[in-house]
Length: 137
Ligand code: SF4
Ligand code: SF4
Image 1: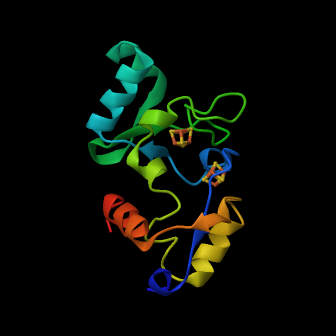
Image 2: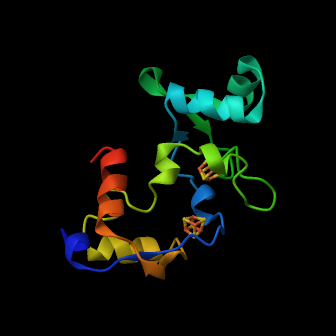
């Protein structure tokens, strides 16, 4: 695994690019526990939360809604996450996802979408492994 040998740098700039333009995806993954945490954070009713922010996909799966232009339902007009403190695992572990860390080319390709890749200090391997484990690798 290339990430074990290379020093990977990452520092999120908060540009919001990874939260928009998701035309290939139907939803942002968020399990029921994560959904409840977000709902409580927002202080809204379950009914309101589900109607406004949650989308049902196949096989009973639910996730955070993405609008027709590919923007996450929680991205505000200034392109900031409205629920950053309680954002789901998919968002917390980015960009340390198995497919992004599969090889150097995948990491470099992702850097073209995310300006935080390659910035800042070197991320400790333990943190990368932790993110990978949390993202289900
Ligand atoms: S695209 Fe990268 S730098 Fe921009 S908000 Fe997402 S993780 Fe942060
Ligand atoms: S929940 Fe927040 S961090 Fe995750 S995609 Fe939506 S706006 Fe981005």
